[in-house]
Amino acid sequence: MAEAASAPTATTPLQKLRAFALPVGTVLAFLVFLLATFPFDTLARRIEIEVQRAGGDITIGSMGPAFLGFRARDVRLRPPSSSGPAPEFRFDSVTIRPDLLALLGRRTSFSFAASAFSGTAKGHAALSNDPRTSGSLQSLTLEMADLDLRSLPLKEAFGVELLGRVSGKTDLPTLVPTETTTGTITLSIKGLALANATVQGLTLPRTVLGDLDASIVIDKGTARVERTQTKGGDIDLDLEGTIRMRPLFSLSQADLRLKLRPAERWLSTNQSMRGLLGLLQRQPDGGYLVPLNGPLSRLQPPVNVRF
Image 1 (cartoon, rainbow, N blue to C red):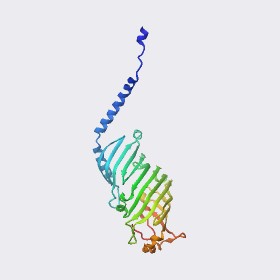
Image 2 (cartoon, one colour):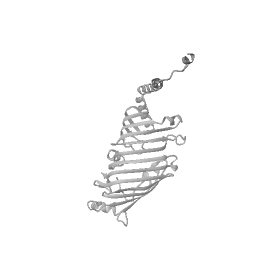
Image 3 (cartoon, rainbow, N blue to C red):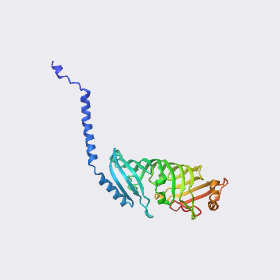
Image 4 (cartoon, rainbow, N blue to C red):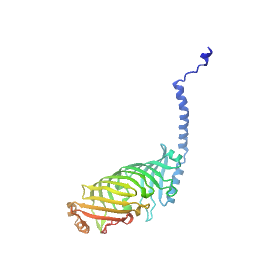
């Protein structure tokens, strides 16, 4: 009788569920409370102040919680610029999810996703924790899908309007120091076209360039353009060469060769362009060679081509 009374009572599945649900429910209740009381408006204003201190400008329409992160809506950004007002980039929404384990190790990295320019982008970024390069990007992965080039502020930035839909992938596992940068970049643009461009004071009609495929491989700070070409349009383009990267990207040294192969039907309706192309080096295949050498900020073709 005594042995029977002292025997442990078997735990039922319902009791096990209750024992598990209590701590889980407590954690969930705490997270709901944290999200409901977190000062997202204060965080948005803080981000705006920090960007202004860095020389840029940003406005955030609203900010709220997202799964393991936060989401900002109606974001307008003007990056820092040393040559007049920078173009404005508009994002419908931007979601940031910090890496909690990285924070415990005193590192800063996060995943992100954005809806903008009629397309989407997502990726992951990590910042350097080296005191010499603190705050600089250490690594970056980015995937873009179906961005509308016409929605980008290219006309405001460069005075040229591009048409087409762009998708691409970027994988840069090492970005600092610059001489150790490695990775790959691939781009695809469907229906690329040029509009509202001026060459030697002459306004180009809308010029269809066709579909563009580009592939760039970066090794030890040198970007090699392996495949960048357009086909099926008024002008076929081929770009090859290298870019030696510098900490200030605008000072990176380019050694590029651009080949142009205009269609005869396009030349016949643009006789002034035929004369201008005569200033360039003619190739055996009937195309024209445009060498592009020097720092990116001062990259100029051998004739006065102004967009």
